[in-house]
Amino acid sequence: MIGRLVGIRRYPVKSLLGEELPAVEVGVDGLAGDRRLALLHRASGRVASAKNPYRWRALLTLRAAGSDPVTVTLPDGRAVAADDDRVDGILSELLGEPVTLTGTPPADAVIERSRPEEVLAAGVAAPVTVDEGRLGAAAPPGGFVDFAPVHLVTTATLRRIGAATPSGTVDPSRYRPNLLLDTGGDGFEENDWVGRELRIGDGLVLRVVAPTPRCAVPTLAHGVLPRDLDALRVPARLNRVVPLPGLAAQPCVGAYAQVVRPGRVLTGDPTRPG
Image (cartoon, one colour):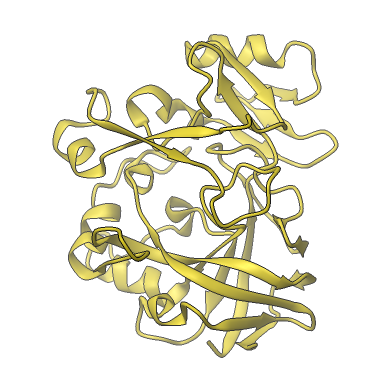
């Protein structure tokens, strides 16, 4: 765990592209401003997520940044503020689905997750089996995180994945970490952190709770990044593990963490056992 923090990433709207930050406050509910908004599908009541790429892969053509208000940048470069009265209409037209941008999770917030093996086999334009899941099982209420408030990935894990791909590299954006850590390991060491505490900088203490199972999202085009099936195929070959008791083994990259003690972190901060 000894190393340093080399990247901070925030995603103000769930499943949209996010922004890199030099510093951020981290509270018990995660990074300030991270995944506090989401798009709700008005017809089904489901939270829109690129985990169902057949319906929602276009979310990754949009970029969200800032706070008070969050600004969404469209593929053509236009920007619309989250508090603009036109935002729902603009995003609904672009996505081809009726959506509402909201900061209030439904009481029983549900997302759809396409089975990643079927997406790999059939492609993103084909309907495949979709499983439903609850949001934020290991997080305080009020946000739209998938499971726990903070997502960690190490540079060693990215190097290990990249080394097994034709390009030799993998962009961290594909795995959407909040905190990118350089620990000098051999890769996939996040698996061994489960149950342990990690201190970042002078104040923040995290408790790692589970490896992060991967869906089809890393394989999708992310803005200018093209599709890359190896972003899932390689972890499936190198790091198929059981993320939580009772679940089947799944390809995992990174780890989820809860916040034991809030604090402010800056790029370059040291990381060490808590």
